[in-house]
Image (cartoon, rainbow, N blue to C red; front, side, top):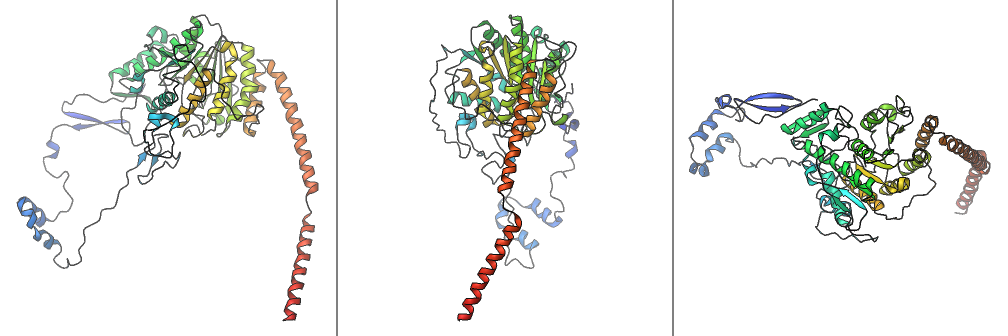
Length: 553
């Protein structure tokens, strides 16, 4: 672990963090004894001398100062106009920097004084926050007393933040939870219709079911430091270790409550995220693997088989490492891969598990950005659900990163809240609906808050109208990815072979039909020579008419 710390005391020197290193600065005033620091360069000696001798009362009659500098010509003297400086501002929604004279973010069009942190995704992105918002209740629902959906949240997780204030905020920031919580509160979902779960810090013994004791100790050590970094992008402050324990504790307790039947399903509104955290390392903004903890706690409560579906745009390399040899936990991930060039570079289609666990890691690696609802739902229909049904899990966990959502600055994909709702509905039919959704990534506040709200409404039993066709047509790149995954995984899941051949025959028939349509269009098409011939005749006709008129006059 790479640790970069601030010293809390100053005994002869201060320490300042500069570009990954520590630079010592003396605390005494000796270095400024010559009086040169802060003085304007090349000040005329005469003017400096007069300034030192003048009193405050003399300043009002100090015409000599101007005359000394402008003796030749001061008739048209004008004050120096300092250029107006525009201070850049970072968009609260997507964190992108904008020039100070702009009112709306040039990336996401969010107003610089948007009220998204107060009212969530229901406030308009184009106007300044007025403090007033009205949300129509579209669907009826139960109160928290009779609700079968639990939500885990604790404000102490907001204390986990990057210590150093930078010009560009870190994408994994406390505002992510604030925006989702504001959306749920504005919609009357939570608090209101969902059952709250009391937070507790997970024990070291529970964490050691997933991580090594050295890793757990390394995370705990950060509570003694003002700030530290596990990797260049994975930070911690003095509150991060407790936030990570609270997040894992909430996921563990939600898994127990759901599997025991005390609640039907749940949503873990937690941070820091976890699916990149491996057995012995923290990375990718993640400290402890919350989904892995929840899966093993569910198994300790009696679940024999657990399904983890990870739709975060980044591959959950930590979760795969933890379970790649475990046949009782099926891990399915849909993520951008691009031949290993997209972070973290793992999750190729041929990574299927090791040492007896082959077939229990299923990776759907998109070859490019921009994949959307149709691609994801097509993959669910032909890969995720057939394999999950054959696996027949007792408990389902969704590693719900919303960074594949439309507008996310890191994911650059095109999944909508309707797409996330549909995928949640499709998984809800497994194992009697015993499902835990755990927040992972997602860095556009409007995208994650609207998507999380849509998912929780599905957990509550709502069936909103989704304008997505049942039979979806994927993109060419998405279709190729699904075919590649089916070709690899049908060795382990024979039910895919029938679906693969059927899908292949349907596509062949579609290609034949497209070729026929192209031939018909070619036959109807007018020959080029005939077009030119018509234009030539028209030219002669118009020319003749013009010539006849000129003869009349």
